[in-house]
Image (cartoon, rainbow, N blue to C red):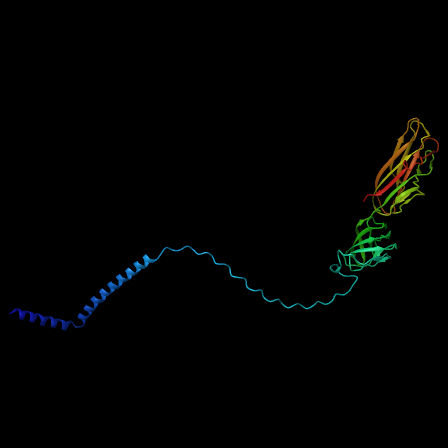
Amino acid sequence: MTNEGIIMKALIIIVFFLGSCGDDFDKLIKGGSEDKKSETSAAVDEQEKTTLTKEKGDKGDKGDKGDNGSNGSNGSSGAIGATGSAGVSNSNATYSEWARGKKGSDLTANTELTLPSDGDYLSVFGATSITSLSEKPAGTKVNLHFNEAVTLGYSSVHPKLLLKGKGNFTTSADAILEFISLGDGNWKEIRRSVDNESFVDAYHSTTQTIVSSTHTNLIFNTEIKDSQLEYDNATGIFTAKQSGRYSISANIVFQGSYAWSAGNQCALSIQHNGGLIANASTIMPAVTKSCVSNIVKTVNLSVGDTIVVRVFQDRGSDTDLNVSARYNTLSIIKTQ
């Protein structure tokens, strides 16, 4: 067989073969093409990723925080509430209505002192004695400034006026007393600023003869001060108008022209409601000179209690006291 015949036969076989394969041959051809395409696409993707990776820079620093936004505008105001009803004028106003810390209306002293509601600092004019204050709610405080001497009457029964010292008190000009209401017209004094607490300052300025061996009331006839009029300079008796603690002191000097025997004495004593509570004596040598004695005592007194200072000498004959105001003195002071 010639070469041309061999070639021809081969071509016939190939054509026959391709015709019998049909679709499978197309798939084979296409599949190869697709695989190649996929490989090419993957390579391109990989190259793009590499390129992107290379082009991406390092991560930048964190930026600064931005400024705060401005505040929103305020909402509109609410409507004004309705006006409250008017209060009722009342001299017995509640404590919250009392005009505390203000100067109130001036008052005229009267048996029942009527208190206004326009202030708690009140000036009182006139000298009429006062025995009660008008009603205010419990807890209400009031300061009374007295422009004249006024007697306040202590009372422990309704309407109460409970004064310090549990007794009547006569004010001096410019005295200030503070009271607190206990309710129901009852009041209690809680503070006072006065120049005339119970105080007696007196001396003996006339001749007083002391009988030998006889306890005799000393008469301090001249009073420099008797703030509450408690000392009777005719009898020598002090009568307390207020309860409290009192300090009592007295001095005496006999005339210097008298002769004393050894063992003679001159003495002072203090009596409380007639009972002896203190005694002081000076024992004399045989001498012609003044006998001097002094005494001091502190005592608690109630309203109406009495104090008397007495003198004693046993020289055997009547003996006169020295008349100098410097020597024979009495002092009684309420200390609390």
